[in-house]
Image (tube, rainbow over all chains, first blue to last red; front, top):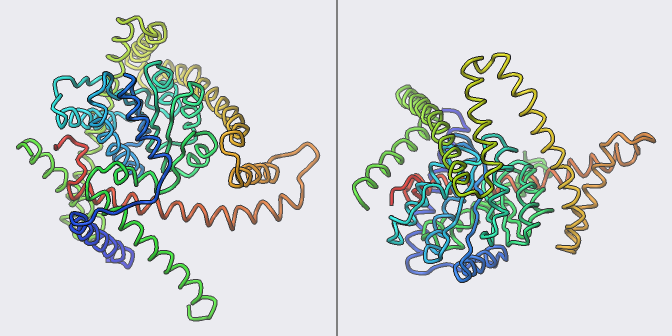
Length: 248
Length: 207
């Protein structure tokens, strides 16, 4: 096995161990996180949509499940599951668009699971998860009518996108509906910083589960991300100092 | 958890672990199993495209029945069926399919690309109204400098922008910021993957 493989295994084992440890510790003392305004506003939008009988629209991107971009889609699915459970008591459950057929099938499963958890399995409508197109632009063009639907009071645009995300955030802005947007792709993040009402930048996308109390493992994974980030910062600074002083 | 949930969760976790170990541990058996599982995944993904197209068709047929945006939906259904007929009779690489792609799909996507550039410009103008602050000013100033440093200008390139300022911005603050964001995203992706391997997240309906 080469050095990269050994390093990868060590990182995975350490991360997994820390996640299990913090999950066990969380049961005794739940952590408190810094305020991210986008999540606070999203929570309020969820409550408002239940109260005024409107629905939320989720757009989960176009990542295939066998590509690295799928992690962003999985994070968005966790948020969808939690939000769907919260809005199940309302008149209109969320509607979801995606640009990949395997993601659409997982979305249907996630929604079905949320309905069953809320004890309303029979009310589940498979057409609430829609494949709107298979290319980036056809997906965006197909999702725009869902954003413009007058019954939609908020849009959660989260997952793996390219710059075509601007077409979705722009449509959401024009309807004056609440919108929160996050993407794993760098050009898409730059675009949504300029265009979205509530952008989530970088790893904030992966924090949604912890902020919506999706389970102790979500809190633990956020805490482990913080620890690993500090370790990487220390390694980078240490490496730079060692290089400057001639040790490396 | 019901029996179906136990089975789906066990299968998903086992497949995930085999693929992960097959990528990291140099063992012939694991590598062979990993390749086999990935081939299955590609097959299932191919079948999922068919399921997705049926979903698209059913959604738009329902819209036609409800007379809600029925014009566009009718156009979509007719185009979908026409494309299918053309692809069947002229094969996906045939003249008919190429005409459809070059004459309709490509120009429409190019138009949407152009629309995207206009939307980007409009969004940048709106940014200062929405989030007036130092970061927004830095964002717009950086975009303008990089654009002026890279774009072919009618009066020739501006040397200081083209050779000094734009390369410095790209190589120092932009590269550092991008790496920072990518490290954060990579850590998020790692923990998300591990949550699925632990069975804490079960998007495959295991609850």
